[in-house]
Image (cartoon, rainbow, N blue to C red; front, side, top):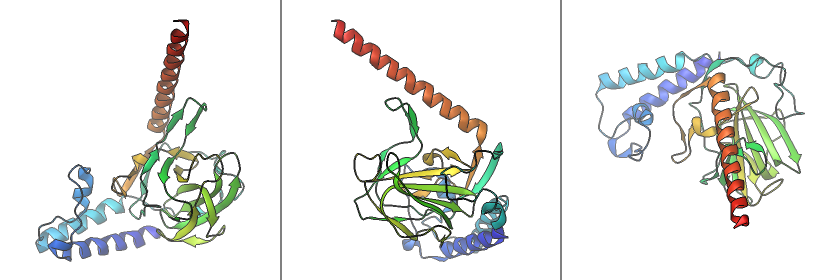
Length: 269
């Protein structure tokens, strides 16, 4: 099972982290979420007992997440014709997803967030990250390339990767592919070069995180300021997701209506 492999790797990384000299430890900013502080070794040397306890706690958390096997992930809904092949699939109400192997796709900062765009009457289903044309774009998790396509009025040149944890990530507005469909990739491996293709007003990476076709706000999973995941396990909840999306859409529409009303009032004056 893939699960055992991830647990073994997680345990080894935790022990190695604890054994590192104090001055080599990674220190996060003070305003960083407390969850990260619980997962990373502190600046002070740890006793052997604490090292063992932390390692066992880490293994225990990941062991609760059952990683899907390869046949389940890359089986029935594997195709290269559409971004969402799960149209007829039954989406589970909840799902714990192991996101511990995350690698940030590009170093640039967020330029546009996930959310409803009243101007276009649609939801911006990802996060836009700054880059220059030709910058390297890397895979966020281990997985397999499902699509490399071109969409003139949308993503431009784009890549879709299905990952071993069951998620998919989408990378849009690229200038060049460095991978092919059905190719295996590791987290951090180059998959494309950044660009400004498709419906784009400037060079950037459009980055999406999806589970069975459902576009999840990437900021729920990833701390983009520090380029790490908030937790090692993301708990997907379909009902909560649908409620959040509906609320954002309603709020955006109300703001758009208010802006139009303000413009009409100004013209009358």
